[in-house]
Length: 311
Image 1 (cartoon, rainbow, N blue to C red):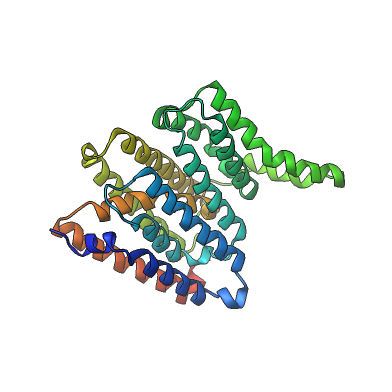
Image 2 (image 1 turned 45 degrees about the horizontal axis):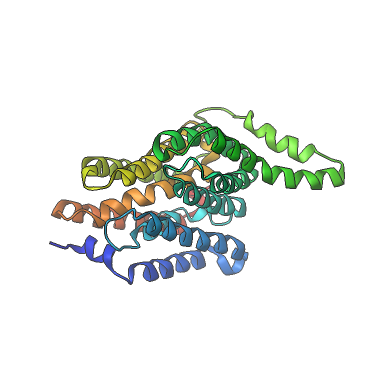
């Protein structure tokens, strides 16, 4: 029996309506007044790549755009992040990296795609150098989840990661001043004070808790019903699970890096939420879907109309 959640998940209007909703939230957030057009372009490009990621890898067993819709809902909930261009660019690079890495599944010869994937991750690290903390984890996920890690793809990842910095170094050679680059890289060791929540807003705290709850719900649901999916899909969702949980762990320990890592958590949570919404059919899950939708809308309104609590 198809319930409200299934009808929305399978509707061809779901994504256009979600996109319109997202644009309205951007307008209310100050798009026109603050000229956030570059940030909006990054946001739209990220949505497109997520749709390609879902469709190209058949993350859902049905035709649905619910993964992109879930991302839009989560992103609009955190409207205080809209103004960050570096955050928007890194978010786009995150999805581009995952999209390319997924094409290397069980292909240890795909050095070209691994190279380009890590070019994007290198670009993300130029926005937020702390994303390099995740590098060993991504290599581990390539080894165990994607089964495409060997010495060739490892070398390709290193070269790809360094490529954006190589191009940037040409500019610093021209100016004969490497101080900005060294200061940027030094951020890898400038961890800051763990568990310092003095600057954490109420809005950020609520967003974190809901994202964590949604991710855990999606994980429990998926692994409870994972036998219905192919082994490849299980491994891809494992990639989202481990990377998303690590991103949320970093936010919990080092809340000063909320911007880049909560964005990555949104990306990893969206497929898990989409799987839950699209592929469950019980009365309880339908009620849960309605409750989740209402809570997300309430948080979105709260962060829009009470900005003093969001920063």
